[in-house]
Amino acid sequence: MKSTAYRLDRFISKYTEHSLSDVRLLVAQKRILVDGVAADSIRQRITKFTHVVLDEVCLNHNKPVYLMLNKPKGTVSATKDNKHTTVLDLIDHPQKAGLHIVGRLDFNTTGLVLLTNDGAWSRQVSLPATKLAKTYLVTLAQPLSDEYVSVFAQGIYFAYENITTQPAGLEILDTYTARLSLVEGKYHQVKRMFGFFDNEVLTLNRTHVGTIALGDLALGASRELTADEVKTLAGCSIQ
Image (cartoon, rainbow, N blue to C red):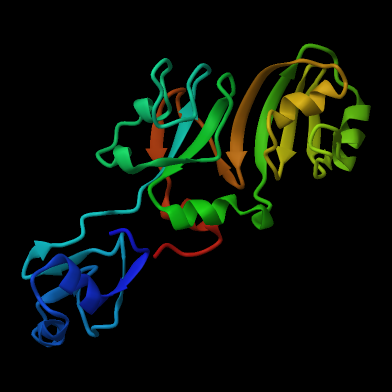
């Protein structure tokens, strides 16, 4: 299905030999099940993830998939790469070929990566207006000071793009380690922000996207998001 949604009668006529006019009778005869329930209208909305069965034959096998992965260092945030291991190479899921990445991480950055086959969900999660915070643990080459906290909270000017970063939350954990929370994702943003102080980022690990935590998920491992996690990230219910 290339379209985002069909009416039930148009879906049936497109993917079977039944005509549009046939579908009303099929509905009346309870021969069509939509998500396990007998269809009650030819106008029912069918998306690529709606489970449609006609005469015990499934016409739509797609299911929405929402995964989190603990990305290792040296893994590419891509679905294909001729030289390096990709995040998709680490996924063991029957529908992994249809997955795409929601929020990439740099080659040497580790931590939480989201993958899905639900384009509408990923667009909702990625909208700048949502201001969804991403949280990182950062290890620096040089000692940190309270000045970092105030400068990050004010925003840092990037001359190349002629922009100022949005306020970011920085919590100093010890001399060389901090927890950073961002609501945007400019090119190499974290490294460039600490570069304002000529301080090199040695390690960068994303631990949270919104309220969703990496937790104790092993490096290189993945798991499906819970229904609550999916709803929380998108700010809406699952279709």
